[in-house]
Structure formats: C-alpha cells, structure tokens
Image (cartoon, rainbow, N blue to C red; front, side, top):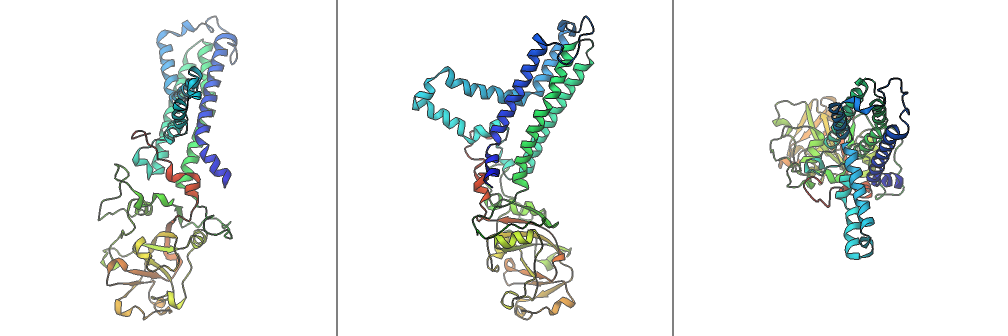
Length: 413
C-alpha cells in the first residue's frame, strides 16, 4: 500500500530522470558518431559516407526540425531541470540566504512545478475527466512517435551518409524512453480511472476479496470526483441540463448533484424497460458486492415492498432508507414486469414475496416523488453498476488525488 503511494508520488521524478537519461544518451551517442566513432553503427564504404556536407543544407534543416519536433517534450524538461539546478550553482547565495532559498525550495515542491515536469495539464476540463486527460497525453506521444519515425525514414533515404543513418539509429533507440514515458502516463491514468479504494479507515479486520470483480462492475469512482465537488470553472461545471438525457453512469455520478433524479417516475416513462437506481450500503458490503453480486433482503423490518433488492431514484433518496451508509452504488436495471404499489399499500407486501410469481419488480409511488423506491426480485436484473466509497476510503488522501490540482499558477499549470 505504502509502496504504491510512494511510487505514485514519485511519478514526476521518474519523468525527469527519463528525460535526463534520454538527453544524455542521445547527446552522448551523437558526439560519438560525429567526432570519435563514426563507424559505431555503420562502416564507411563510400568516399562520401563521412562527409556531412554532402547531405545538403535543406536536408540538414529538415533533419534538425524533425529532431527538435520529435524531442520537444524531452528538450523542455531537460532545459527546465538544468535551469533550476544551475540557479543555485551560479548564485550560491540562493542556498545561504533564507529570503532566496525559501522561494526556490517552494518552487521545487509546488504542485504546479510537478505538473509541468510530468506534462500534466491543469485545465479544469480534465479534473473530472481522467480518461480525456490520458487521451490527450496519448495523442501527444503518438504525434512525437510519428515525427521520430518520419525522421528515421528521412535519414535512411539520404544516400551515402553514415552520420544521418547513425542519427536514425539514435532516434530509434530513444523510443525506449518514449515507451517508459507512455507507461508512466498510463499508470497515472490507471490510478484515477481504474480506481480501487483502500478501506483502512473503516476496519482493520476487513480483508479485500481475492475473487475477480463482477462483470457487472464498471469501476469505482474516487469520492472527490462526485458532482457535489464540481466548481464554477469552465469545463468543471456540473451539468446544468435539468432534463439531461445522458444515462451514462459515470456522468450521473460526476456531473450531477446528490439530489439529482436521472429519470422521471417509472410509470411516467414512455419506454419502460431499463431504469437507473441508487443503493447505499457500508464500504465493506459494497466491496463484497463488487466482487460478487447483490443479495436479496429478507428481514421483515427492512422489506416494505417484500423480499428483494432495494433502490432509490437518487443518491439523496437513499439516505432515509439505507440501513448502512458510506458507499453509493448507481446501477442500470432491467425492470421487467413492474407492480405499482401506492401509498396506502406500503405495508401490504412487507416481509413477503407474493408478487414474485407475477412481477419482476415492485415500484412504490410515494406522495413525494423524490422519495420513490423500488425493489427487484433477482440480481440478474441488474445489468451494470459503478460505486463510490465515501471518505472512509483512505486512498484519495494517501495518494493526494484530492490535492493534485491545487496550487494553480495559471489556467493550465
């Protein structure tokens, strides 16, 4: 647990070290093939092989432009790192005088510096969209890869010049570092979007199940991504559409507030097939559900609509009904044949399952529509779900996910 969080906090340093090693390797090999070891990769077989002037000025310009474009990320990181390291070397007083040293140390520790070094944009539209953030990183890496491949091809096309061909080999070697960078970006994305909670705050006796996650389980969402935490910044606002037609479970959790009802009352729908329901339980039970499935409630005092699995129309609607709290589940449900239960019939089916023979679900119409709830008789009716473990989940703070976009210096960093 600790090792994973330490590795996550070390991502920025790994990006820096990768950039430095890539720069050192590229520069070192280029010096070797240019000055001392021209035949490091290829042998001179033609009189013009070692003559760089034979390449032509235009070709040299094209090679330089492609090289700079393909290594833009590495160049920026390397220049920034060396400038930061040279500042105290040139002006030693920065480390001796607190007035100079403190701002310098603060700059090194700031999250904006960390984001810059890892090319992790702080644009508000990415805060609630980890997948989009990774997609943009992936596009950048694909762009850099294409530029480097174009340079390799161009260098090999040039006839009778060992230097350009050797440079192509050096660029090909640099793909190793690009792969490392891609893996670091993917790990960063994986922590956010393929999130797994840590329940150390709830109980020391709970053991995480070793069985695979249910096929119905889509993902866990970190609690700080819930819609109640959206801001007024462009791209990070909550969905303002009161009649939002987006039935994506992630959208419902991330861009809508706790009291949001994704759909009208079931019997007011034109197409009565699938319905969005919310369930609340404790974190331990939620984890067990994620690795197996829902269980039928059979206790007399908890089964107003009879035996079954209970859901409300919103997260807020579960607060007054749930016997356990701390974890929210948003599920898409196949309602099947639905029994309508009115207010005066609320206790008619308590502790029973009489309606199971003729119906698949029972829907209770409360006098207040926001308090409606429904019950299904079989867990197979639940098609998929996502979960949020609230602040009992210690991983958000342990990994610093809730503070990753703090200390903003500008709108993008």
